[in-house]
Length: 197
Ligand SMILES: Cc1cc2nc3c(=O)[nH]c(=O)nc-3n(C[C@H](O)[C@H](O)[C@H](O)COP(=O)(O)O)c2cc1C
Picture 1 (cartoon, rainbow, N blue to C red):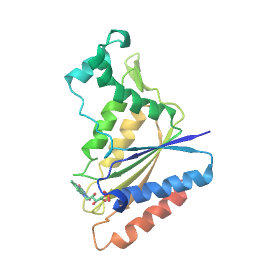
Picture 2 (tube, helix red, strand yellow):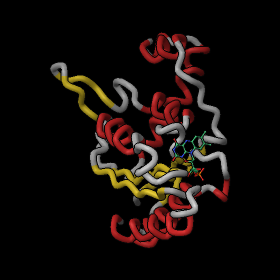
Picture 3 (cartoon, protein in one colour):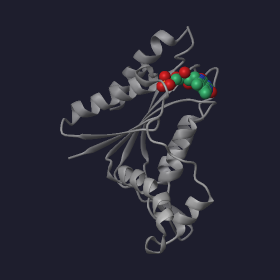
Picture 4 (tube, rainbow, N blue to C red):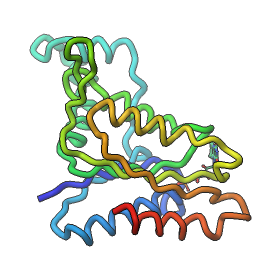
């Protein structure tokens, strides 16, 4: 049975453009594979702390030598990593915030891109450890890319490729706050889904 992991980041609940696009992606994936299971990780519901010195030290301390506080610090990261490792398809719904991703998504990545878990180095070269997982990313932006540079796609593609997820499709909902594009941004994104999945 295949597993879908859906990461959601928007603060705007059901009104969220990136969630609406993500929901259509999930609908299509489940139509293609009715037995697929879905795990939802809403980063507005899960508090993901920034990585600090204490957590980093805990990551690098062997499991059997960690004290209780270190186990707690690593526990959330372990859970998030295991969700990624178990997923056949990773769906990320994210708005563009200040040309990049919301900091909750960056915090999630900092917990998931973990040495010895999702990547390692072999002869000095990075090697991703997430096998046979593809990603589909829904990005919404207030402006069209003629007005705002899209740094979200290259950043997320590079971060996911680093952990081994190299098959990545991006669905863009551009200009959701621009009266010239707001009517067409979502229908255009839905049309991209039909072609990509
Ligand atoms: C803090 C913040 C920063 C934003 N930065 C950008 C930006 O750099 N470029 C852009 O086009 N839109 C920007 N926007 C607009 C959002 O990208 C737009 O409203 C988005 O599509 C909302 O997605 P959502 O409905 O899924 O939350 C920003 C919005 C917020 C709240």
